[in-house]
Image 1 (cartoon, rainbow over the protein chains, first blue to last red):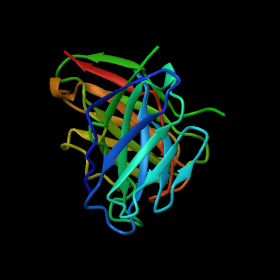
Image 2 (image 1 turned 45 degrees about the vertical axis):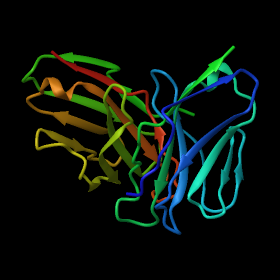
Image 3 (image 1 turned 180 degrees about the vertical axis):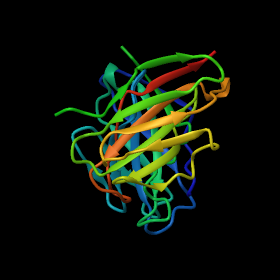
Length: 113
Length: 115
């Protein structure tokens, strides 16, 4: 499984944008980039995913570098509810174990009021 | 709609005992996953079902762990002769399809404590 590297922790203020980085220098051309987050005492929840182009949804935006060796999850206006551990995960296409999610330690985001 | 549910939410047992953990996936989801999460770590894959069959059980740590999904819906994770090192949160997830673009929906987990 391809590896990802994320900072252990980040801090933000409420209502400010947050940029969560992820490095994946060994990504292959067909790996998808997924982000999940885990709020305290809950199971992980899906945030967003992408392949090559930047992606937006109601929760966040995903900016993917042109060489795909890094990506950034963007929370446009952090709220206290966004305090969680954020996981960046690479997923291979079709079989060979691509079904499972391989979690690292993620980035613990603290949001200050 | 109803999400993934897991029962019990907490389970305390003694070393050497047998435990069963239950997962009810989202209705209609064909894929079901079990993960285990130790304190301060990300979830770790255990086993994946596509329908009734275990498509990938490579994450099961040893033969004390077993999981079934007899009718392609509810799944039970079974742990025999529990050890203190089995203490963790056991998470279940389901997805409508499988593959690199699918979204896995997680339950709240079962916290297992082995004394």
